[in-house]
Length: 449
Image (cartoon, rainbow, N blue to C red; front, side, top):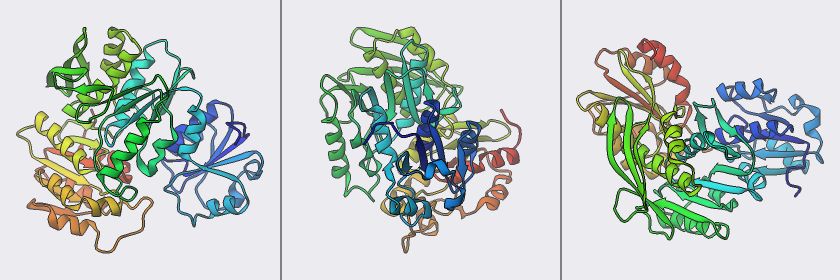
């Protein structure tokens, strides 16, 4: 297949976080870009502002004619798109070249120096932190993030094209399309059991990914993993080590040691031990590039965060946090961070389970992690790409949660619960469309920061 020699690119599911960054990139490369998405969102509106035509109905006659030229058009789709989608079926039946998002990322990066950030959790945070550090250097790079980086108000940052920073997603084994020069593995935790048989199957895929590192490349990994490369963590045996962690006023302050290099009093506008580890991973990659210590510290200190990653939305009269947490271990990390910051305050979790299969596979773990909170409200499961599974529901999960004050709710119900006077710390969590409620909740609660 010709690399990026097509004139036209049509995305089915263009509003997705991974799809939209690729669409932005191709538009910057002066390609013709269009797409379909069922939902109108902040992201689709931003793409339209870039003069990317987007349709929201499965109607062929709404597509601009140039994208119906089979020779000149490449179709990109997300795994969330069902095979019965009318547009998808049309392009298949009419012999268009059609590829997945991961295939397009492979085409873009295959002959470039590539830094791949992988792991079950923290990929977006590490990628975004690294992007902000690199942005303060003279390195010519492009970064594709899995979240909206607040420093750039985008999931794409372009400062040249010699180096590419990408998230390497384990879902659908799509990361195996990449051949990185530097691979970072942040962690490996049981997930995506609709794709993998078990944890060992998942780990085997990561081990296969390691073998795809280019000759002369390097591996950086969390100290809890047993690989050959450079490790990061808190143990004295690790190559990159965290020291003297302090949490203060929604900030983390810590030191880093690497061989004979010491970075003192690093400031990060994020809290939680897991985020200190995320920052350490970004620091480790930066030091591999010999980026000066002061630039690393500046990039971290000036990092504004990522939308929906422990995003502090309000602090008065109620503390309101929004987070993308959609796995039991991520919920635990959120709870621990809240407990460090607000040990004496009652914590109210509003959670939208993501995927029927994940809810089924981790039902007890979800219940245990949510049982740490003082109050819990559940939305219906967000299905994304899946059909419902008999017996798997938010009602079933709620039964297992060991909290006295618990309820099932919907969008209107959330507002009613929010307005109760006993709320001190409220956190919304989930990878579905719960993020669309953030502004409504903020308006109900009170004054913005």
